[in-house]
Structure formats: structure tokens, C-alpha cells
Amino acid sequence: MLTAEKKDNAMWVRPSGKITAAGVDEFRKELLELVEGGETELVIDLNDVDILDSKGIAVFIVCHKSLKEKGGDLSIVTDNEDFKGLFRVMRLDEHFTVRGSNE
Image 1 (cartoon, one colour):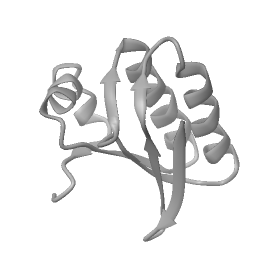
Image 2 (cartoon, rainbow, N blue to C red):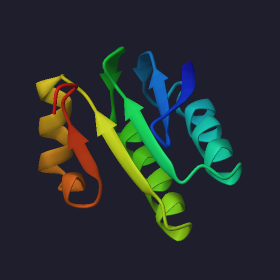
Image 3 (cartoon, one colour):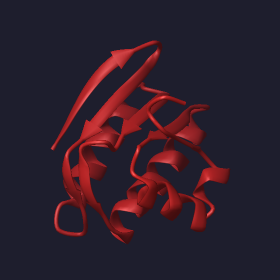
């Protein structure tokens, strides 16, 4: 469901397809394994994601909390304006970075 690559002191994670209730457990598990494995800077690139629902959003909240406990940070990269708007409406962009690919 995702690929991960270390780049510029951060682990870049690239999920694809859907981040919805149907498959969110595996996605959450994979992210938390990275955090438990010592990663403190995660960048999640959503540019290959087609659908994101409330259960998917909850994974980002859990991941952010786990990273904060370890002194780390979460960043979301997406060029999808609907996704950016969703993070803004939920005020999650006040807790972690949400930006486009070229920002």
C-alpha cells in the first residue's frame, strides 16, 4: 500500500490508491512501525492517493501524536486541493505541515 524512502533526514512515505476505512488498519500499522523503529520525521506524500475518508484522516492524527511524543514532526504533501481543504477545515494544518509538492 505504501513505499518509504529516506531523503533529507526524513522518511518519505508514499501511499497509493485509497486511504479509507476498508484498508486503514494496515496503513496505520505501517506508519506506526516506522515511528516505533526510530523515525521521527515523516513526510507523507498523498499525490498517488485517490480517496481519503475520515478513518484515513484519523491515522494522520494518531501518527502525529506518536511522533510528537518522540519529539518528531509530521508533514503532509499533496497537490489535491480537496485534501488540503479537508486538512484546513479540520484545523489539522495547525498541528502539522500541509503543503503542495512545490512549496
